[in-house]
Each structure stands twice: as C-alpha cells, then as structure tokens.
Length: 359
Image (tube, rainbow, N blue to C red; front, side, top):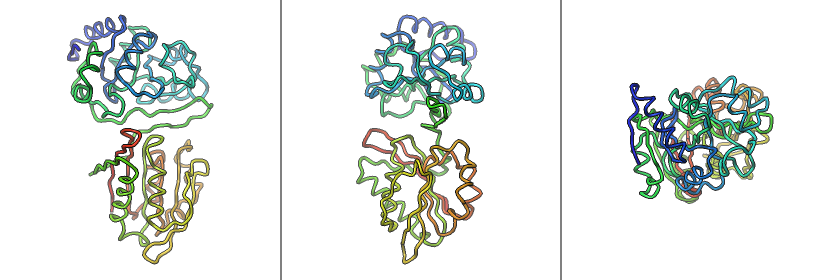
C-alpha cells in the first residue's frame, strides 16, 4: 500500500494518482467530510469484488457511491419527488440518499432489494475527483465490518490485517479528520422521507459501557437505574436514545420498564408514536412514556401529543430516535433529569453505550 500526503499544493498530482489506480480496478483510502472512505470504481465488477473482500461480512448490504450532482445520480438511480427534494435542499453534505437503482452499477453495489445509496460529499477534493474520473466511486467508510470509524490513516492500519491492507493500492493521508458522525441515511424509495441513521445527540462528559450480551445490557440498565434512583417518583426523567436500526433502543426500554415496576408488555411504538404505561417505584405511581419519533417529518409534530402532560413531573419519558426532536423538546425538559444514550452495534451481539446523565 502506497501512502501519499495530501496538501493544498499537490491536489492535482494526487488526484491523477487516484484516477490511475481507480482506472485499473484498484482501491484507494481517501478523506471525506465525515471520515476516511474507500474508493473503487463502482462500475467495475472486479474492483467491487476486491472491495467486498476488504470489508468482509457485509451481509448483502448496499455500498453507497459518490457522484457530483443530481444529474449524475439520475444515471444510476430513479429519482422521485422526495429524492429530488433532498438533492436540491440538503446536498452536498453528510447525507446518503437511498433510491431505487437502475442496475447500471457493478454487482454487489446495489442492495439485494435493488436500492442504492448516493452521496454528494461536501469535500472539494472528492467532488473534483469524481468529476475528473467521470464515473461514480464507492463512498463506504474505510473501516472493515464491526471496526471503529477511521478518522486517521492509522485507524485503518490498526484495525485491519496484513491481508486486508494488501488489497489497498493507495492511501491519501489528509491528517486526522474531525470526529464527525457518519452520514445521515435517508430512504426515499416510498415517495416519503424516512431517516434510517442520524448523527448522534450531543454528549458532554460521556462515559462508555460495552455490552457483550443481553446479560451485560441488563447490568447497564441496572447501573443507570441506580444512578437516577433518588429522582424516580420525584422529578421528571427524560431518556434521549439514539442509535441505528437494531442498536437496542427498544430492548433497553423493555428492560428499564421492568426495573420501574411496569407490569404491561412494552412494545415498540414505531407506528403508534407514543405509548404510556403505569409504573410504580418507592411507593409512588407515575407513567412511563415511550415515544418513537422515527416517522416524524418535523420535530414540531411532538406538539400534537400534549407534551406538557407527557413531560409532567414525575413521569419518565423515553424517546427513541431522539436526535429528530432533541432541540425542539428542550422547552419541555427544563428542570428534568436528562439521560442521553448513544447506542452502537459493534457486532450482532456486542453493543456499545455512550451515555451522559445531566442532573
């Protein structure tokens, strides 16, 4: 693997080197506005197979690709009204827009369902690279499956095997990138916009807990309960839960509900938006309010749920996909105990919880 340091003085020569590698089916590690990505010619079957061998364990997921603009995207995916709205109002930027593919990319790029993620990075070097190359390049992150997000070339080297590194032809080193969250993933295939992944809620003075199984997750729930025990039944407590699909938000809520005396079966409120359960702790009765804002288009939609009643003392409110309403609900959580938890799946069994408690 050859490494080249990127600077303001050598961008064109670096770009020429990248294009040479891509044109012969090679792989390139390159910087973006979110993290380091791995580039391959998205129309080259051999290059994509090489990329899949590097990433490993992708489980038939689509590989997002970078294009220069909406016109270029339209060559490879069907753009409905919802998708065009995203392109015209939110791109370039850290957003991946999911659309129905046209089957014009190499096998393995589109998902098994025929959908395709498109990015227009807010990173001049990448946009110019794609413009000069004339074809879409892959925009998936440079980490292999279940490894840390790479913000420096060292992150890639420390978390890959010698065999995986041998598949990389060129690494473009732009130094350590700002630690920004991965791109927001927006599904527009149903003529509506659904957020599948968002950047995280702000966590100051965060602590990290790693769970290797459900027993560990139960320990984490017990630990959080102990931390807030003195406020239960006395103050409003609000949980902001953020994490990708399958990260464990509802599992956490079910475990927590048992700890605070909820007798009913807690189910996901994705389609009903909000469910309320009777809870009892320290000889006091209160409500557990379980909300899922996944289908919200605007944060103001929460105002239709009578938030003053929902956030009344001493209710406990758990909000899944909290980043969609976080800023807006600050008006309702004044004086409340706030628990922020960012959940991440490291492997199907292993979870990581980044949390902060604001008293």
